Structures are given as structure tokens and as C-alpha cells.
Amino acid sequence: MNIVFWLIVVIVLVLIWFCLSFAFKGVGGVGMRLYNDAKKEISEETEKKSDEEKEVKE
Picture 1 (tube, rainbow, N blue to C red):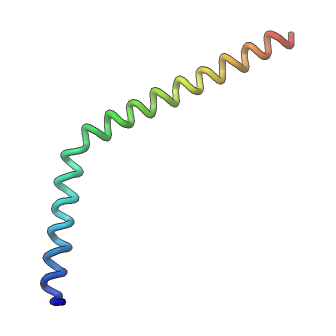
Picture 2 (picture 1 turned 135 degrees about the vertical axis):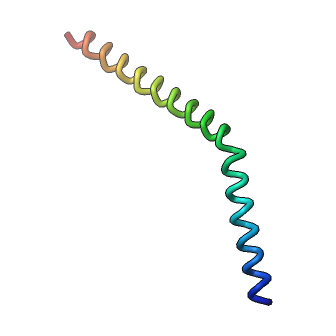
């Protein structure tokens, strides 16, 4: 194949990458918020369990 063809393909792919990254930035923010909320809930739950276990042992 021609090198010019592949150069154009790479440039178009890079442009599409940048366009999509701006388009899905909000979706990524929502995903990160959900992940952080779930992580916070899990850590709070394990802290409650460990506190309950300490109370039972005492």
C-alpha cells in the first residue's frame, strides 16, 4: 500500500480520537462519580463491620 494512504488513515484516526474524547468527557465524569461513591460505601461498610466486631469482643 501507499505510505500516503496510511499517513492519512493515521491522521484521521487521531482526529476521531480527539473528537470522541471531548464528546465522552461527561460520560467519563459520571462513571468516575459512580465509582467513587461505590468505593466510599464499601469502605464505610467494612469500617462498620470492624467496629461491630470490636464491640462484640469487648
